[in-house]
Image 1 (cartoon, rainbow, N blue to C red):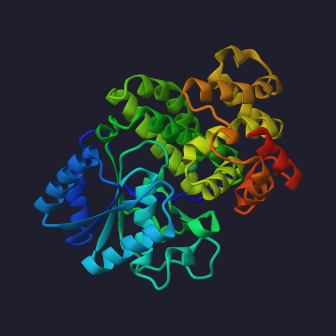
Image 2 (cartoon, helix red, strand yellow; image 1 turned 180 degrees about the vertical axis):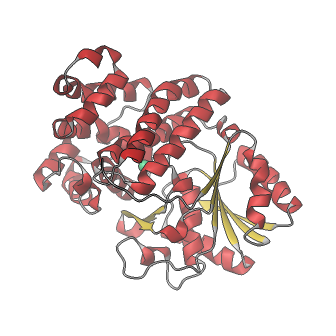
Length: 386
Ligand SMILES: [Fe+2]
């Protein structure tokens, strides 16, 4: 068995009603809190009022930055960091889905370091220090796993480029995962984020850094998504389904915290960078059938296991036979959850496919795939997804 190191600095507070613990959690880090979210909707406004009450009871003053949008940009981070400094925030609370939590992490860096968040990307020599403000993640979706990862995805709009800060300094100190907050997530967002959780688990299981503990969590996360996501889509207020998805998301986040993602995420990051209107989970759904067809032969046991989860009649079949069915079965699942799509339907012009394929090879994720695509194969993968 492969040897491994394991540490999990993020404290996880999981379960219905855990929101009530936010005051005691945040009080550890000071008395001034910047809350970061996307634009305030009536639902978010009501939640913010609850959060404000909980923090206030714990003796914490808060200010709210709602300037984050899906695929948060460096400009949005800079505006949030400026507010954090003006308010003299001692902690940053990311309230929402991946965009809000990732933005909170990037703001925690930019508010305490010279330059912008873009200067602290994963490959830079300069990295976030212990000056980084403590981050608390209060997740309201089930999919990005951001509440337990050291990753903050940011987009530089003028360069049409999406990249990430990757450093333990931005790991949330505490993740509050309260499934009650997820019951009103719209159906399409539930499907996108739920599929994202599935991909985190599956890609981690393919990653060279996968070990026994990750394998166990990945299998459980995948089984949970396959069982609970269709139920959460049918009945958004089913707390058992939302809890199952919240657990899947957290397990899958722990998988990427320790292993990582592969080819599909490299492609989805490129799509999101060049076409910010395409949601992350949507981009993943677009590329997954092509990725599975391309990769299954290189990891037959993994793909066969997944195929059997999706179609139990394959339990008696040989790995090669089951793995060969995986691309079509994954596609069926994507259709079933209502997010099947093509690049041509989401505004990607054919004459940009070559530059998109080149962008898919900028991040190193594709190199962690069991089968590493050449430039020509990447163009074929992009074309097949178009
Ligand atoms: Fe993801």
